[in-house]
Amino acid sequence: MMKDSDLSSLIRLNIGGKKFCTTSDTLTRREPDSMLAAMFSGRHTLCQDSEKGYVFVDRDGKHFRHILNWLRDGVVPSLTDSEYSELIREAEYYQLLGLIEGINSVLNKRKEDEEPYAELTRTDIIKCIQSERVKFRGINLSGLDLSKLDLSYVDFSFACLKNVFFSRANLQCAKFRDVDAEGSIFHNATLRECEFTGAHLRGALLAGASLQSANLQDACLIGCSFCGADLRSAHLQVIINMNKCE
Picture 1 (tube, helix red, strand yellow):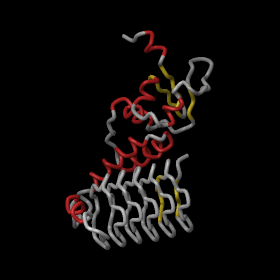
Picture 2: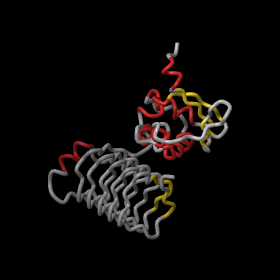
Picture 3: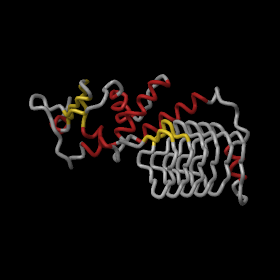
Picture 4: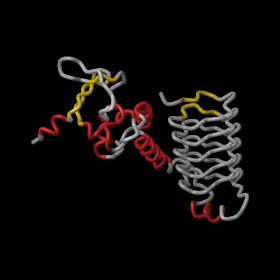
């Protein structure tokens, strides 16, 4: 049975014609920096219909139940690749970076059996970066988890970096010239002054990444997410289909 305080926090949503009912706590707790958290933080005046008090959001409501379940339980739903692509687009709109990262993690695990084995392990990488001027030129590192490592000044030129997890890694001044980094995750990574000339970054996640003075000339950025990324002084000439956060 709901208490009066619970009833007062009820939120009615109309997402593109589909109606949902949840609480302000659900919308603000798990992803406090999201657009939904900002909308229902109490700091903004919301437009509601006069009859039942629904707040209208002009988005496709098809996957909004998955978004609500993520905010409630923190569990990524089991979907097809095409459905994940649609859900990521909605998560980017609502600025749900945790959900985006979770989906990409699931997709990377799904692709592990399809991708050729990486030539090195995470442990091998850690040992290598203890020396100066490390080079992984032309090496296949597909699918590795290199998150939170100090990879500054490392030369990855011409390497295969498909679905590599670089989240929160320090990659300042690293070289990614002509790499194949399709589907890689650079969420909140430090990429200042990095060289991405000619890189293939289709579907890469660069949300929240620091890309000041990075060189992205002639890089393929089809389907990339730059939501919240810092692109000050970055070189962006002749890039292809760069998708920014709405």
